[in-house]
Image: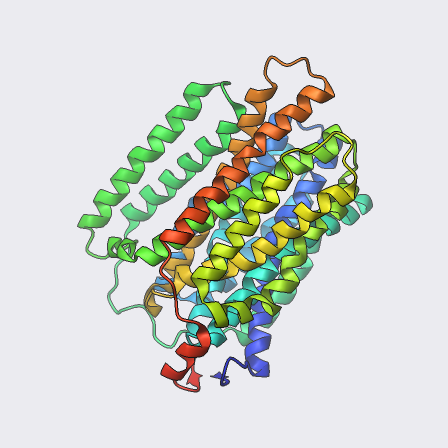
Length: 481
């Protein structure tokens, strides 16, 4: 597939990008739709509060626990093969979720769907970074990919509300239809690798097992933080066991002949800092969105559909990311655009700190729209920074690391905000005024996370040259796949 000049993508390249963006849209919208539908599912199937929570958490566990393995699998077994197989697994278990008759079936379906996403998403991202040449073309593709993913989550809230009105099972069946279309298109359009994994490359089974177990336990411990002091020993035990296994994984990788994760990759300071910054940004974004959703539904009494429509303003990044952000990156470089996104996020979340019990929507709108603009500025360039300094044969690993950090960031953001809210509400009289005070306290969490992220992006991220300057040092065209 020939890639065009000066950042222009030919028709076939755009169609390939459309298919890959469809996968990240599928992942984002799938999560959002279920978040809207879970109260209805709980009532219809008679689920306990704990089981309903595990329907949501099961996906996060599967995703966070296996993303690192998924990314490396794409490098070793082939990005195309990994992408197609994971899409197929996603399809099958989404369908099974729609036919579920009990809570345990939903939990299993969501866990395996999360595992499938852990292989699918890094594979899709690494296909982009290896199919489009470094510079304005790849930057544009990555920014479109990131924008579509965020837009999928925002639109998924609306779609989920509408589908739940028809019947909650459509929240599972609708992704099946989209996945079928993506599978058919991807089988024809996704290119085979220009070169396979090195001959005789072994597979680090011990490293894979210890990495997956460590990620699962750490994700489980982080999710349990939102329960506060309830069964604190179990939470701390999971975190401690996860850290021990993480240490074991590092020892295995140092001694392995063909490690799952070559530890030298962590010497790439720009990549590591971008991953940490992305973790903080996503954690703040999802923590803020979670608290605002509770505020609107529990304190203000808004319906799920009303809440989803209100939050759609945050989805402006789906339009801005592919249109505005590439121009800013070309002119100012990644580092400045990322820093600007963090500063906007600080302003957006801080504006919501004095939220009142009867605030009109117009008073909330500046925060919602500004946070969406901040996402458009920061997330796509962070994706570029996290993959730009990594050689082609490790792009899957770099993508897996990025999504591992962002998944843990989302879990930390939501769990920390929930835990702070629970501590602030403990011992209060349960009045609306006390609940509002607790929400305000919890909103400090996302503000603190983006402040730390702003510091990292200001002093840590290596400034990259604007894409229009890099262009002159690259071939005008490149043939891939």
